[in-house]
Image 1 (spheres, rainbow, N blue to C red):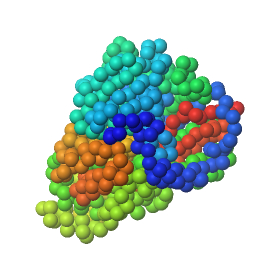
Image 2: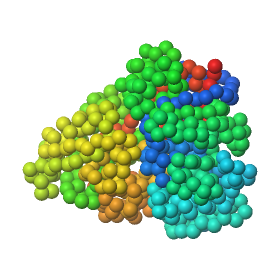
Image 3: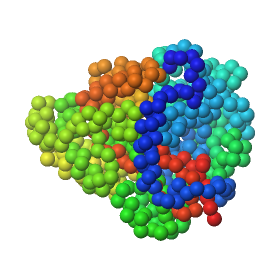
Image 4: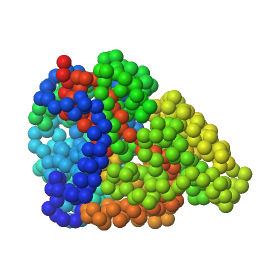
Length: 522
């Protein structure tokens, strides 16, 4: 953050970001079914029925621990900052503007007249209460998101954040969980029960949550965005099995299902009453690593694991060849992607065996993986077990269902690796901070995984200049890749299917659907 006159709409302004992301998105939407982009006059009314892949970990954005929660959180919680679908560029949300009068100060101006679903004001005092809670509460899983913030004050319509060091990522951080505004009154009255009694300021307000069945919301009649939302209600039906969820859409029981696997595209194409849309995402299928203990505290062992996997074959077997193989955490469509790092680890079992021997494991190693019990995840596990076996890595998996899977690896420290997804964040520095920052929840080892990593992380947030940030990300990503702090496999494409009455849906690079502009016909 450098210039003191940055307005929300100017923040991170760069033609290169916009053009590159716009071209990528237009390439994606060219694959969309005809009705996905149908023209017409949006019509209010109707109930949107969405097939959701999992039960939320929490309806409190501060305490949840699953990236898939966002789809259910977005309708209820507006954020301080929003992002453009095509570019992930920051734009006004609950904060109508912001300035940085000096490199370590960010001043947000809060819109006047916004209220929470319980009728209380979403004003500067409420915003401060939310940010302080996120930074200090014992149950907060997003403390590291605001790790650069030193002090927060509210005066009039302004909220001032004094920082420990410059942080150009902060506006977009406030478009994620840390920027989802909750009613302070409801949080105080509900205590721990707020996980199940959410009160936000979004387009829909909470009605009910039946575990592993559904989450129901109804229109917020006092929403601050004119004419939005368009649907009267949204119901998320929890259907973990994707084929069952897709059948619910083709049968007309639900209207929308998101993030299908590529193999299901053929089924969608054969269904006359369903359209589809494909787009690139930051959703990275990978193996998280606990590098805080043997054997994966040894960099040669981690490198061996990366050389042992065959990403191209994994893509073909698990994703029908439609995913993007990778050895880094940012896809080709992203402005901070570093092309030479995307194929840093080729499939080379012999080299992997040699690295294991150099690391003191000439007889190979045994690793325990943590992952999910559903069919598609088990298929991916079996592919990887066979691949790494050829390099002398004996991998087995413990399987769980839903949020307890994440807890087992990241909180309880079970297992050596965790086969799961990283769903991405609007600003890439937050992805790397959450994954590898010292003490971060998603860093299973909790420590610094490589020399110079902490300094490299800070450098990515020290300037708002795009060229400076790109150079900083190149260095950071090189450290992470060379030290093999994770095993990225592929970027999963967004594949959504929806009934003929659904209009106005737009994909985004995060691959996390938002439904405010969706309208229903008939």
